[in-house]
Image 1 (cartoon, helix red, strand yellow):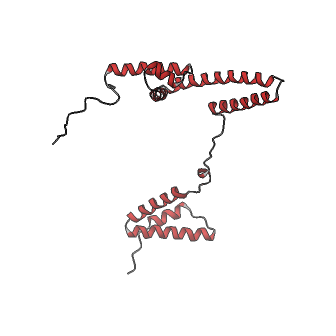
Image 2: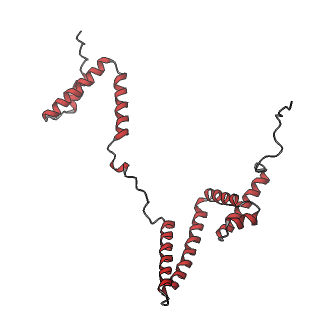
Length: 200
């Protein structure tokens, strides 16, 4: 009968990630990946150059971007905008030719795609989905939660205090229906009055 060993496996997936040397190697590899990607190399080519898979190169690039968000994303945006400008100038050359309407149409279509991409990159477009539920919500769950909390506070009071509070609300409602103004003094007088004895 074979017995299972409690010894850890000699081969772990992913290799050494915890030592200082491994962390330094990973940081250098990520710097290489970011530098190559900013020069518009494909992830497949980057993976071959650095010695990792295409997916690992993509993951390392995204991880580096998240870590150094501000500088790297601005660099990527500037690079993308420069590339879009170069594509736009080539598309303008196509539209300026008067030889073929098909070539001009292709140039205009390319310009349209470039404008759309530039607007998305710069955040100029409005969001594609607009959540209007918050605009038109009239209390809903927030109001119900507030009412439940108020009710719980009132129910925690002694029964005599609950009667006084409900009597106060009842009197205020009657005055409001009659068009009378309820003053702060009247509210305080009701609250400070001794509780009425329960009839029994």
